[in-house]
Image 1: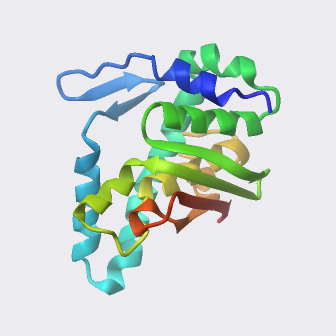
Image 2: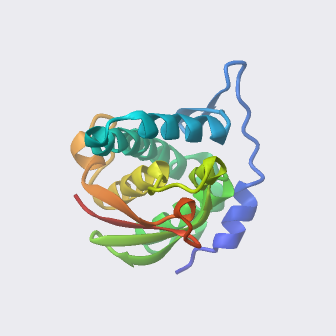
Length: 201
């Protein structure tokens, strides 16, 4: 693998991204917001703690789905951006595998999750390990009784779809949902790290 993870993290963490008065950032061909992680954590925890147990699965699905759609379009914006072309693209020797490793280095650089791929079977399976991620902060409300890293689950499925799901399309729902991600370990549940397994849907 030609990807130099440390160098990508160092370079990308220095990229200055500014928001407008409403906290909206225009960059990487997408619009994103700049809100505290505690906002999203408390929102997800309030939502999942108040629903009837029979509705927990569809409620969690909606949180994962939001991240999956966002991850698909934001991920494409990142891997086609000027910053990517400057710092990551020159290291890519084997696509799409090197691109996936580079994407998780960027994911780490921007503080979403200190995460990396620990196993990759092209088009079939990807295992992500996250040693710190903003959703693990739900432990501030007491140790969670459930896996709560909805963002990493959705984004990881989306990254796999960008790599192996066919050409990118803004309305290509079939491509977005070609993969699913299950969380099998979580810092929020007392594990040393979070672990996520992506497989075909």
